Amino acid sequence: MTGFSIDWLDLRESVDLQARDKSLAKLAIRWLKNISSPDQLPLILDLGSGTGSTVRSFDSLLDAESIPARWRLIDNDPNLLSEAKRRYETSNRIETCLADLSNIQKISFQNVNLVTTSALLDLVSANFVRDLAQTINAQSQLSNIALYSALNYDGTAKWNPQHPLDEKILSIFNEDQCKDKGFGPALGPGASECFKDEFQAIGFTIMIANSPWELEPDDHELTNSLIDGFAEVALQREDCSNSEIENWRSFRKNQLTSGSCQIGHIDSVALPPKKL
Ligand SMILES: C[S@@+](CC[C@H](N)C(=O)[O-])C[C@H]1O[C@@H](n2cnc3c(N)ncnc32)[C@H](O)[C@@H]1O
Image 1 (spheres, rainbow, N blue to C red):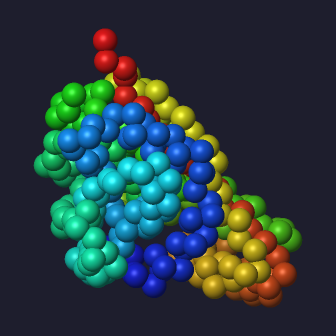
Image 2: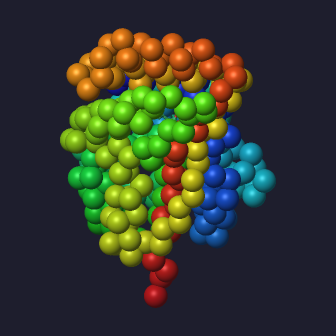
Image 3: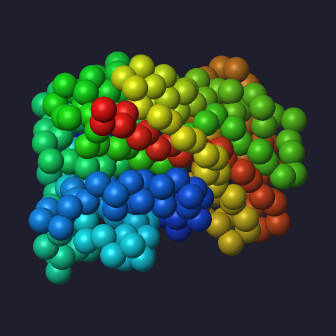
């Protein structure tokens, strides 16, 4: 089991939906349209799917292009997958698959046209991304698979108004983001750079765009939980005193309904080399 609750994923989903870069999502979908054939529906493999947030973010875009895609959602959390199943029980185009991605070589990419991830790559290691690139390279005819990777945290948090401890707390949080989450040392803020390097190395063309969370007073529940997350991580370390951290937490919570915060993320699309 991992630590991602349905409540947490629900809490972030509307902000995620706003944040995702629409032009990159459309690019991935246009790519699918171009390689689709009338006799086989395109297959999208969503790694670390949770309850299917990427399916929901693609729904209207796929409809707009009249692409009846099939989805295979992979996660190692049975609760999240059964919630995904429950939400799509009337659809015969979505299947779920319980599997541990830390052994990516065991995942089949046969007949897959698009691999998607969201809020996943900052949890994984550099070895995972390299193995993902190598596995796709080895298992597929490269020209048949593209990748869309959304909402990878980039290590930035811009609070308004500012507080003197913001930078220090952020650097503690960013160090913590690099702890092992089951894949080896996590990439944290380095995720997008690593994705670009590994897929460029096997001939893919990479496009990137910023997809920040823009947290406004209406998003106070998510911001509140983020403030607690930052403070709890800082409390486990000795870089700041507990009273400094609690002062920071109170200052931030007092601003919940008047301040704002931008949390940086990056979306990427990797398109395979063209057939010769
Ligand atoms: C931050 S959540 C993102 C979920 C979903 N993609 C979204 O955007 O809402 C990360 C997801 O990765 C899954 N995950 C983490 N480690 C995993 C592993 N070793 N194998 C498969 N899934 C994993 C978690 O269960 C969780 O659903």
